[in-house]
Length: 114
Image 1 (cartoon, one colour):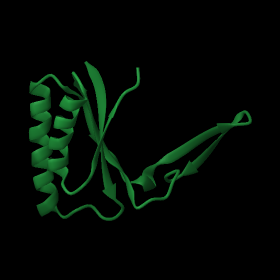
Image 2 (cartoon, helix red, strand yellow):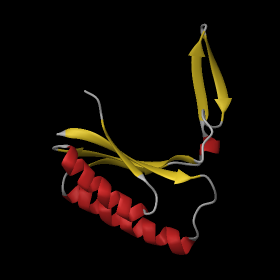
Image 3 (cartoon, one colour):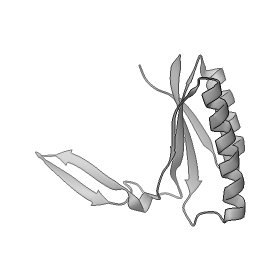
Image 4 (tube, helix red, strand yellow):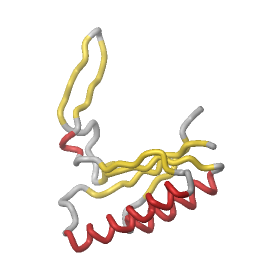
């Protein structure tokens, strides 16, 4: 079984209102339950906004530490799920269910190397 990263990208801006967010959370909870029941779930988590990030860059025997995201963009990584799946087709099926749960946000499916 290979591991896959299912990444959720969201636009910068305020958190959706509770009437929208509550429905997304219910769908995510159901999906995570199905992933666990299928033995495919490894780990999942949401992230704080990019403004909470700290970037570390090593060089010249020192480490430069800066606040905020490394790159500026209109979208950022908002959350992720790590799964195991026998092949890309199975991973894409789980990714499709995740995309449905967080619609209209995009989901990227990417295998781990090695």
